[in-house]
Length: 406
Ligand SMILES: [Zn+2]
Image 1 (cartoon, rainbow, N blue to C red):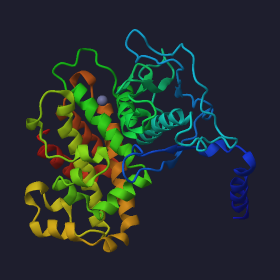
Image 2: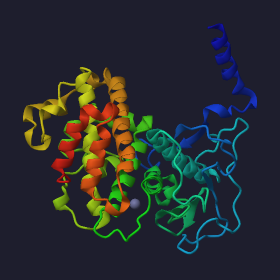
Image 3: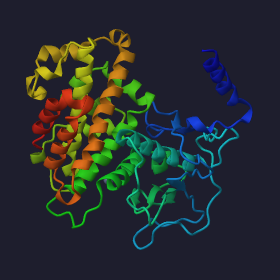
Image 4: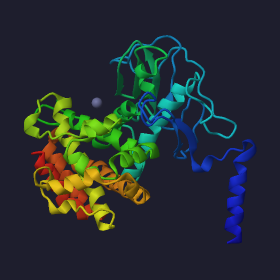
């Protein structure tokens, strides 16, 4: 006991006076939503995983680095690919303590630090779900991902063979700056991680849902990333009084949410309702994953005595939920919720990880050239049959059936 207390005392003092403490990760400031979204004006301190070799000026590490061109660069398009060969602005430098959270919004290096931290955070989360290191699909011809934090006069973000680039349609304006948008960066990282884990198409993808599935997973990755921020979870739960089920069933998130990720998942679209356009076609599957997450969350709440509503009682909640339950859920007072907030938060984090892990690990059961939404749903169920997601398998199946995916 004495020894471990000494160790703690040693650790807590070693952070002071400019000593580097590299072994437990590196601090950055990250906006969970762009700072113009109400409630998200302040960035959160985020710890990025300790990586081999540490996080150096750039920022840069073994997997990715930021390159901030001096000249206005054009977006990459084949055959022009990284590394960027032109002149670069000074890199974001760590403080004397090895951390980057001294770089404040508005300072010249902030976009570099922020875009790196968002990308690296999503990779940390996905590697946690896979349970090992993720190898880039563009390795070994490119070993690291190049992040370009701003491309002037370009209103887009894109990722591809070894790059992630972020546009800035009006310089200096936060609404026009993709590097400040965790949602967009996480979406692109979702594509890169999925390409790396699932693999590339051999054919042109016709007759498959490969591209639409990519969009669904990219969006869901962005949601999983958002739900790793305290600001987001606290706001979502307090706003809904902890009742995600009723708000989801009534498609009420759309009016309640400031978070774009939540709004886009909250819909009643089935496969028969959408066009063949990839973003449109991705919506029912992405929404089904969100339904799964809400189902697991509410089931955990019920099992722990934190809610009276057992989602397993209804196979089709949207049609079967009695009006009294809906009204009781919507009218529940907020002070009543506060006493359950931390327990509800733990349940939501657990549900997020149960579904997140299932989705990410389901990719090992899929073949890019034979990928349909039906196959993806079956792979999810196959993966759910293992470990801690097994109790929710029937609910996952119901969610997929409701969306006409199975
Ligand atoms: Zn996309």
